[in-house]
Length: 80
Image (cartoon, rainbow, N blue to C red):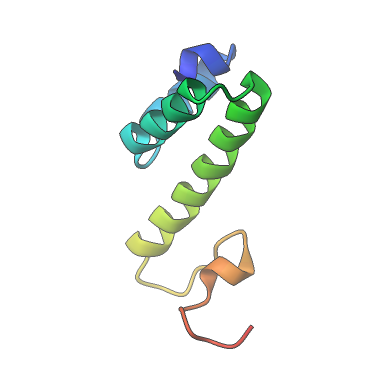
């Protein structure tokens, strides 16, 4: 799926080796099976890659390093 969406080898490798790659691939294949446009699937791939990368880093860190999105770096239930 990632080879269909991207031409740049580094981008393909990043997506194939990123967090939850199998789940992300299956979701993108689901979008394709539903008839989503290539542009839509590519946009979804970027969004879910960044989200899983951010959440994966949040889970692995033991310090208070921040995620790129400040809302995602706050614990659930904390005021914004």
